[in-house]
Image 1 (tube, rainbow, N blue to C red):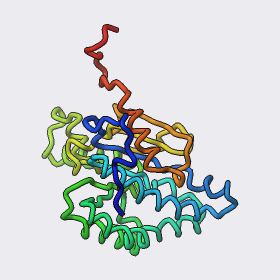
Image 2 (image 1 turned 90 degrees about the vertical axis):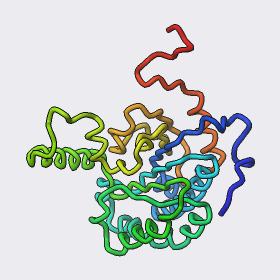
Image 3 (image 1 turned 60 degrees about the horizontal axis):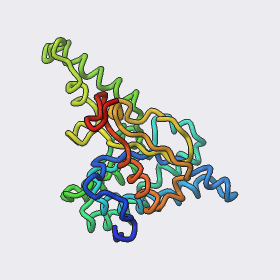
Image 4 (image 1 turned 90 degrees about the horizontal axis):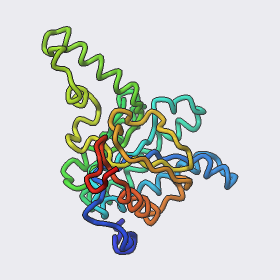
Length: 256
């Protein structure tokens, strides 16, 4: 599966200002299915096709990290049949997509409490990570059984334990200390998304990367995730490029 960026990217896209890390809350699968009088799982299945499309579009565009919110720690509250289907998706998804990822030099990474997933799901995820470990292009980072409050709580416990053991001076704890105890630490200076996109018209964060998105640009679109296209993705990146990121400071080109 290969996309031609000349077809998906308009002349408006500044190739020198592509966000290095894009995070996406993939929302609207169930409502997409409901509008078509289909079971919710049909929306999730179609949503996986969209993941393939947007992954390749982002890679072609030059994005370095694409983090996708696949399953939250709160999603276990959904109906059992739906949860079971979602847990089965990685097996079928990666079996068909890993060859394309390798061909396009994309590696798979995962954040979240993977050890709490069903054994078959863990195997599918870990196999995909292993099979793509030598790829040096874009990182496709899935947030699976992930919740930001749980992540931060775990980090605080680890820091407290180190302080109690005397291996960490409390007075030396700073933002970098916390960064190094979060699940995104392996991303280094790419751990903080430049832009967070949410589909389906909802305008909330839903416990996703709360620490990491402190200065991320937020973009919300009414389009349901299964209807996402490479062209829409490119248009949202163009919208991002029109933002003026000041990180709490002032825009040097403006007096106000």
